[in-house]
Image (cartoon, rainbow, N blue to C red):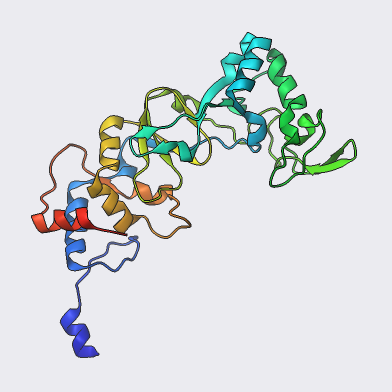
Length: 284
């Protein structure tokens, strides 16, 4: 056994804090070249933020029919209704809008619900309360305000017991998270799905979409160039093989993505033909 180990051992160099992965000699060479040429995403002038956690999507994420109804009842409703994407709507270099919209009552915006009577009525009396959720049974029309309370308690309405949203300091009609970075959704940005699957699901958004908490956004410098690198087979290979780490169902961990080194310019990394062939033919 000791002879076999001596004959087949591969020297591997790790820096402090690196995740520990067994690499072949060719993989170690590829990793070294990428790290020599690239800058970790954490050192770029970019921000990565999770999409919006409403605490109760049934109330806040609405169809186009409901959107149109709310705007017809009160045109001011249009001011706080935004097109929204889910992680599943984000593909490699493309976006598939599913005609869903967010009632964007972010706590950090300090909205007065009395200025939006149609939306207030929807939140309290909308049919959404009759949808069974993970935590609650269908509840009677009119129970919406109690359902949306952010007290973390169990309450009763017309004989039906149910749980409110988790306890926060936010108002009953506001989303669960404060979304202090709400203005980032108005900037050119990269969208990506929380679950990666077998391909790099990064797409450029210039249309000011928001995303729910199954997606993320990247804003900052050189967004178009960065998106091209993130869907490049070389960096998709590198992320999967060297930086992704463990996870359930290929779920992205933002801290791992921040470790990915990407060159700040389009300079070629001096891969050999053998290394390029290895990358392009790599299978998980």
